[in-house]
Length: 277
Image (tube, helix red, strand yellow):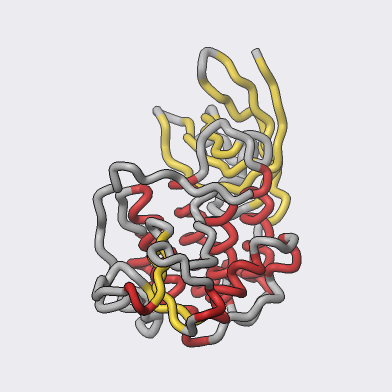
């Protein structure tokens, strides 16, 4: 029997059996973590108010017979100001949904946990939550190893600084110059300055990421492309987007891809996962 304790962020919770709860966390120690809180639905004191999504907790677990049992859980941070703002709360849910779909279970990836924690803190106090979400998703894509080099045209090897306009396919990691672009609604149009800023973001510590500022007109195309990347990798729709579109009709992300809304693609036969060194 193995016992361990770790900081974690609650992703989802659901009923399990007659009185238990199955809780999924984004943990610092072992990536995505699923555990059973025995008797959580009956007890009014033992696990009171600790399993709310996007809460930061300290969880104590034991592993037995291939199951993870939650023996204790202490609330560290509830992010109450964020929960009182429906836009910020929706963005937190969207980021958590992407983490749930992309972070592997049982594999330590402390950098993604600390990014998630920082994102919740920034959403809580930043005046531009959409910008926080964009930076968090860009950083997350890079951490997970899916962001390509973005320094030259994939076809002609033209250098980034030699052209003012580029087209990026976030899902497949392709970057092509205007000379080789053909009408394809899966690509997003970006300028050289935005691409240079993304490149710079990959080289700086996490705490400096939030100082970066994207031009307003670039936010929606980038967010749309990053959401398309998630759909492409997981083959699933993002439920949080539907909620955001209901509460924020002017969000405008769905139509930000070149030509139309994002489409699904079959994986390339020789496609590989990009790694950022």
